[in-house]
Length: 273
Image 1 (cartoon, rainbow, N blue to C red):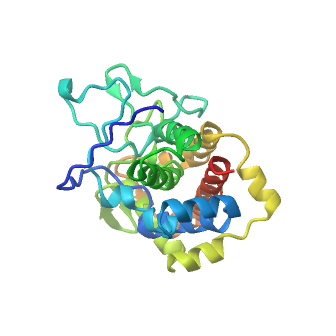
Image 2 (cartoon, helix red, strand yellow):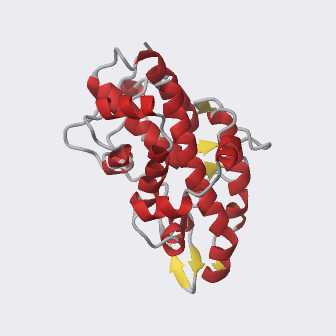
């Protein structure tokens, strides 16, 4: 089994990384996924999580952000920089996912690659993993599938900022454009609890869901990067009309949440088939 060095510091370190979606949006992703689990996957998850729903773990990575030390050839003792939870990914010029973990001297926090790695190890070793590693692996997959579908969590060759710059939204200064996709957009479009959000958004047909879940995590990353590119047209200092912006991106927000949920279910169904 591939070894992860997962160090959960007793005094939980809350790091200053950006969130993807908010708690309610992440919970909605997990609830939609739960609605589409096979009986076998549901039984395994119930057993491994001691009866808790995967929704319970939807924001685990935002609530508890210790440094995750991952066995990628990275040596923490020799580090001159901090390694934080990988919550973004980088797209190439053709929107395919950059597959490496390093680019030059920069540590690429590639949540797509991490999710792919964790899913493969969980599939191969879930019966023999320690309880703590198994729960952590499940929780990270729940969160990463949400992360990789958040439009502001994608880095492009000409834009590495993940929207961390000020704009004016609805006539009010916003310190980080990124925060629109942490909860403002989703909350304004879908002002309900996560159960209601899942009920009202999870309306796609089996045929549509089958189309959305074709391919693998890297295909889904490319789809997310392609669909999210228009969000990055708004640059530092942009004055954004809130009504027009919500109208423009309402369908994108809905689709990204649903795709994340359906694809998360596909991951777990494949792991526990």
